[in-house]
Structure formats: C-alpha cells, structure tokens
Image: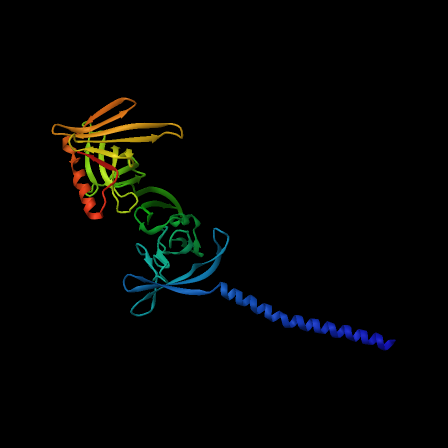
Length: 371
C-alpha cells in the first residue's frame, strides 16, 4: 500500500515538471512573435526631395496602420525626422525656410504628385510634411495627411484633411496672404482658397467651371457680383445664327451640337439673359422655309406630370429686318434683332446640311427644309 502511494506521488511530481517545462519552452516563442510584430509596425524608410541651391532633404518615415472609411485597415506613412544635405559635399546642413512646395520622386505610376510634399503649410516659419492618405474613391486620387512641425515633432492636423478630400490635382501656397489654394481638374475645373489662421482652415474664395451643352459652360465665383453665370464661348463651328434683341435683354442663339458625341450634329435653340441660360430647345423638328426666310419649331415644357406649356417659335430673316416671334396660349411676342450683334444667317442651314451629308454621309436629322 505504501508503495502505491509513493508511485502516485512520484507520478504527480513528474507531471508537474513536464507542465512547467512546456511553459518555459513556449515563453520565448511568444515573446519573439511580439517583437517581430513591433518591428513590422515600426518599419522606417527614407524619401529624397530635391531642394534649391544644390541641396536635398532626407525625410525619414515610419509606416502605421489606420482605419479607412469602411473600417478596414490601411497602411500609411508619417514623418519622424527631416535632414538637409549639401549635394556636393554630402554634409548635413541646417534646415531653412523655403517658399512653395517640393515633392519627392514618385514611387509608382499612381503616386500622381510625388509621395511626400515638403513646405510651410501653416505659414509659421517651419517646414512641414504632407504624406499620401486614403484613396478617395475617384480614379487615382488620394487625400493628404498634413503633419505640421512642432517642438514635439510632426503632428497630424486633421483640419487640413479638407484640402484634399476631393479630386485635387495640385495646391499652391501664398505666404503673403497665408492661403492654400487647391485646384481640381477632374470632370470640371474648380479652385478652393483656404485662409490659415491658428492652424485652422477658413474657406475663402471658390470658383468652378463646368462644361454645358454646346458652346456654353457654367462658371461660379463666390466673390463675383453675380456668382453663378452661364458663359457663352463663341465658335464658328457651332453657330448658325445669333443676335441680341433691340432692347439688348435677350441673346438668341441657333447652333449645332453633337449631344451624344456620335458625330451626329443637330440644330439647337437657346435664349440667354445677362449671361444666364433661360430657355433652350434640344429636341423636335425645326422647319426651315428657304423662300420665306423662317425657321419654325415648337417646344413642350413639362411643368409637372400632368401640366405642360406649349410654346411656338419663329425666327425670321428678310431684307429689312430679322428677329423672333414667341407664341404661347394665342399671345405672340415679336422681338426685333439688333443688327450690330447679328452673326451668321438662317441661309447657312442649307450649306451646313450639305456639308454634313458630304462629311458623314448623313444630314442633321431634326431640320426639315421647305423650298
């Protein structure tokens, strides 16, 4: 019986020793994994930026993991230090204030404006760093994370994220006005001027130019007397005839436009008042009577699902005068054209139809000619 007890005690002791040894063996392995993970998260790399006067900057970066808008992990860079070197002597020199922005060499084709931006972005006399941020989801455009130089190192300024939260092609700095102007060049052109005060953004002037139908484009300027305007860009290839009415209030336009970019041009009508597009007709048939010198067409404007307006137009041109008659609900308004503003002629419709036929083996289909 005593032997059995001793055997049991011996078995317990041996089992305890094996468990302790297993723990000791597993300890260093776990510790090594932890060190590896820390090394991976703190990988550093250098970016080279060419500077004036035969100098260059070496920006040391470290990568870190952040959360994207969809809560997925995204790897980004942040600056640790900046050292300036003389290109000839390769010796380190003091960092000095520079005007404008300097870029590192692009790392790949998608790095559209250089991986790292170097400039005084908050106009405090210290050079700052901007690193590539998240993909904004439009083509190959990325936002920028602006790290401002402080006594405690480079600090991310989240307020500056607004500067590149849309497809911005480039930015410009104005140290005298203390402004950053961001320029968009995707689908439409736009600019946004930000005033920098106490490391905060204050949106100032903004502009926008966007293509419109045919010879028109939309222009917006927040500081203009009339912020929104539709600008008319004259092009002889577009116009059949244009003129202003005698009272100079309306500008009447007849032009060709390839609405669907299929190389098939149709006749269009438009009215403008004070650089604003107020009426247009892009559909239906235009009936041109060569003998009478008239162009007649009707436009149906839908006010709601059940209500509409039917307007009849007649552009006329003869030896004595020219102009337009607009008829709605039996009431006709006749507007005589100003001879000094007249360009083109209704008669050009004949030659334009012939040219279109010869060039593309088809005529613009929405014009019927009555001889």
